[in-house]
Image 1 (tube, rainbow, N blue to C red):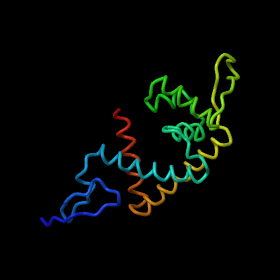
Image 2: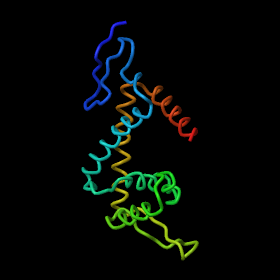
Image 3: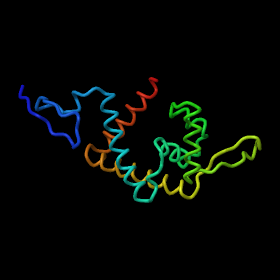
Image 4: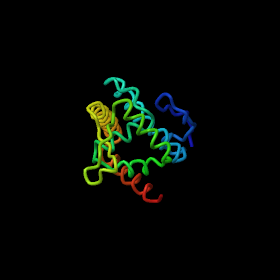
Amino acid sequence: MVVKTVDCPEPCPYRRDVADDAHWADRIAFPALLRGARSAYAGEIRRALAGVDCSDLPRNGAFVVGAIARNGSPLGQIIADLGISKQAAGQLVDTLVGRGYLERRPDPDDRRRLTVALTPRGELAASAGREAVERVDARLAEQVGADDVARTRRALGALIDLS
């Protein structure tokens, strides 16, 4: 077996010596791959948000704004999906409201409750984030093909189902 040093995209904490017939990713633990893959999206989203003057969107803010824009998910479900405490969720929502991404509104079915909705700035951030994800998705499909992307989506879905 011939071993060579494999170049992976910079910055690459995964550089390893692997056999000629192997891909550098074949030797990396799945959780580490998931973390590294997430950074491709995170970086593109950060750049897109900066480009529309939304660089102050807090950590997890893009997830919340995107979920509301995508399908109007209830805030409680979004927070549950994030896996953060109620206190952290309240602070995140307060920050998103304070920075002009969300607005609180009375619930039309129960005036004692409040709902949140995207402001125009929130819609702008959601649109920029969605376009950034689409750019990464397109580059990935160019590199590995649409069939591999579809298989990866199914594999990740199965992994999520394990939790």
